[in-house]
Length: 435
Ligand code: NAD
Figure 1 (cartoon, helix red, strand yellow):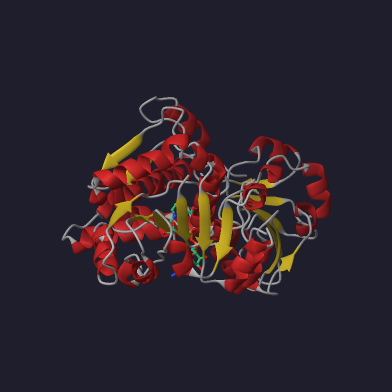
Figure 2 (cartoon, protein in one colour):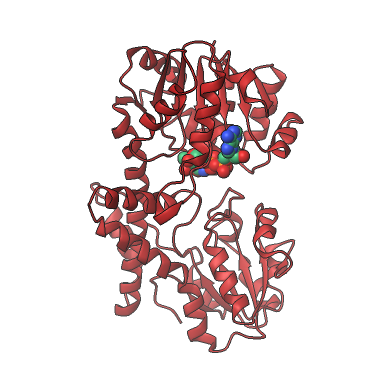
């Protein structure tokens, strides 16, 4: 059993802390946001992540998981301290390290014994050294700084953390390596590897992985645009490509662009790192440009179809940047809805869990419908934005009866175009022949 402190109780910190508690350690999660900590102390999880609340409550009840705003008292006795605070986009696309370095300073002041300090946040190459410097300025205790980037996906975060494809650990210290290997041993029983490497390589691995995934998405979105020009169906092309084992099916779905708190900022940050080193990462610039165009593509299609959008009513199904999360950061829905409102349209939206997050973006400027069918009432068109399972097979007859005009802009290619047409809908997908 180890004593662990986790700084930052967002998607990553809360999941990591809870999973370490689940494997028997005594974990204290720390956050500067008092509302978060108060909610967590009551056993209420402030984010939507399937299964997390149950696991939090179980480990709190077992006395292994604690929450506090007070950093020093928890960091002092801890053998391992995770820094899992935000690293948002900063100046010129670089990662903003102010929260990481502020946490590092507080950790330095609080150390009481040898401690492994783990950079869990996604941070640029060289940050482990920076954190080391900052901590060293404030302590005489021995410590090591380890880079241990996180690869979990929101919506499947517990599964990803408890059974990771791999764990990446960047350290040059044998003492830290042993401790980290022990900590992660319960999660790699399936023989998935713990990859030990130097801190710079570990830091870069996280950005490389996200940039590759974003690249696949933009590649398919460009492919979809070409399919529309030549009359091909990108879904057929996708299947034909994915069947090739060298390519595989993952992350080949065209759509309305990637969003979320990671891909957009991580692609920018990696491009900025390259630029700082005198390299132009042209490929990643193209990935970003394609994504920016793609986020506008449903609005462009609607303008082409309707001409003037003012006075029209539109239904939007899905607000979160992807299913099974309430996270709206950089969600394609934001740009679409702002575009529709800007053109004088009315928007009626529905999302199974992201409505509270959406209120922070749109306030009362849109109508939040209690169901997806209620959102479609009287609508000139439906925009399908997030591929929640419950939107995949709508009752098209019911939908048609409720809408003013039966038109679908399917941003995720989840509705069968032929079926939609047979039911009398005008259907527009991404990279598919439209009617
Ligand atoms: P988040 O914004 O949800 O949470 C960060 C938390 O840190 C907030 O609750 C904030 O109040 C807290 N915080 C900030 N400064 C603090 C301080 N000095 N002391 C204590 N708490 C402090 O962020 P997140 O989505 O969990 O992401 C955290 C990091 O992990 C980022 O670097 C991100 O890129 C990376 N990451 C995120 C995901 C993801 O899916 N969200 C996946 C992998 C990696």
